[in-house]
Image 1 (cartoon, rainbow, N blue to C red):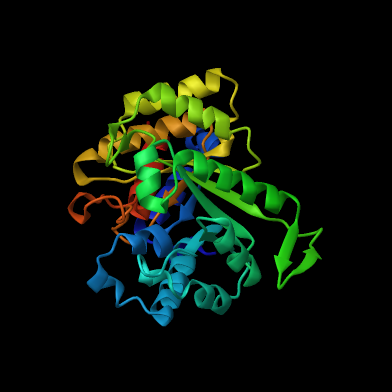
Image 2: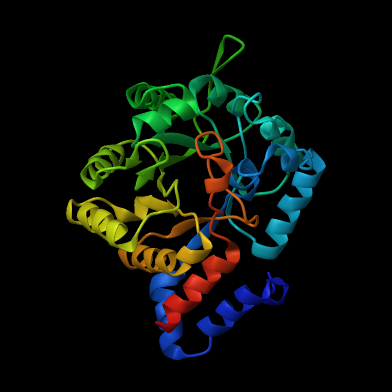
Length: 316
C-alpha cells in the first residue's frame, strides 16, 4: 500500500525509518517485525455503553472494518465474540459479520467455551481468542467459571483443535490441513478490579505454566490500565531469565491520558525483550464492561499512541 494513504502519524514514522542509516538499522533489527493487532470491533465496541452500541449495525461494522484495512492494513484483526448476547448484544451479529467479510486477513473471534468454539468453527472461523485470568474473582464474574474450571475448559478446547477433529451434526470431519490459531488473553496481569493488586509472583507462575500449552500467542492484558513500567520490567525480566520464549507474548494495554509516558516505557521495554505484537484500537474506548464500572474503563492503545511510541523508540 502506498504510504500516502496512511494517517499523518504513520507516514511520519515510515519517513523517519528511511531518513537516516542508523535509524534504518534500528528499524530493521528491532521494529520490522513489530505489528499491531486490531481489536476495534471487539474490545473497542465492548467498552461502549448500551446506547452507543445500538448505532453499531452490521453494515456500520463492515464500514469500520473497511476503513481500518484501508488506513492501517493490519494482518490480524478481531471482529467479534461468540458470547452471551443477553450480556453483550452488540456481538449478536458476529457470524453474519464474519461471513460478510471476504479477504485474506486473519479474522479472530473471541470464544469463551467449547460450545461457542464449535459454533465459530461451524461458520468457518479458524483464528480464535480464548480468555483466562490470574484473578479467580475476575474470572468468575466474567465467565461464571473459577480459574481452575476455566483452565479445564481451555485444555479441552486446545486439545480439540490440536486433534483437528470437528463434530458437526453428530458426524466426524477430519480436517487434516486445517490450521487453527489461538490467542490467549490473560487478564489482570497487574491489578484486578475486584481483588486489587495481584502478587507478581503469582502472575509469573501462572504465565510460566501457560507457556507450556499449545497456544500461538499469550496476550498480557493490563485490565485496569494501571500497570507500571517497574512491575512490567520485573515480570518480563523474570520470565526471560526462566528461559521463557518472550516472542510468544503480546501486549494488550489501556492508556489513560495521564499515563501515556508510563505506557510508552512499557512498550519500549517490551520491544527490547522481543515482544512483536500490540493490541490497538481505532476507537478511543475499551475495557471489560462486565467487571469494571464504566467510569473506570480506560481506552485501548490507539494507532496514534502506537506509532508515536514506535517513533520515539527510534529517536531514543
